[in-house]
Image 1: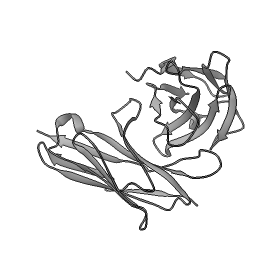
Image 2: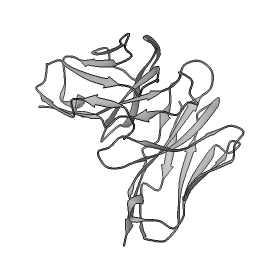
Image 3: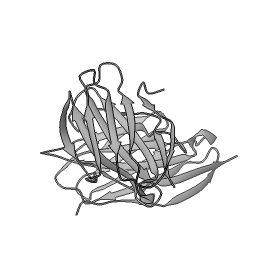
Image 4: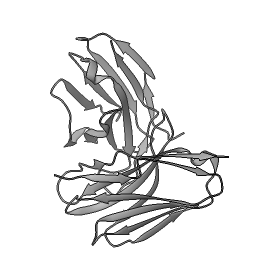
Length: 114
Length: 113
């Protein structure tokens, strides 16, 4: 158990809908990362937050948005869902924002868009 | 364009044998290289992280090497166990500016009894 929690574990929804994925980082970690893993693309970095502020942005679509709250939990919002958004979404956390810090991954949320 | 290529794509070995996985990258400038182990349907778990100045790092039966000149890394697994069956992912992060890592597609390792 990494100490990072993600809810829900599974999510099934229809195209065009909007969903929110939630992540609670390890106690004491200030940085949160979101990743998408699909069969055809592998793991991709979406976005990073550090202590409530956006720190880095990767291959995140405009239909997706995220935020980190004062209690450091984070939410990833996915809207106007398409079939291709079906994937595993992972959250990871680290104690600080630098690239060299160890990241601890949560168990993931499996999103299925039908 | 930053790229990370891993080989082989998949590998089957017998329990107790050793194996070596390869990772070649074009990411520049280079900050660090990580190897992750990912069991099916679970989150990746970090095995090693190496910076530019490190050329070997071990974690139990896992030993990673890095040649920053040729931009190559390898992960050597000694005395494989059934629990080593997983996907092994190489991730390279650039230095300077924001953290935007490049992931390899992974090597799928199956260890048979």
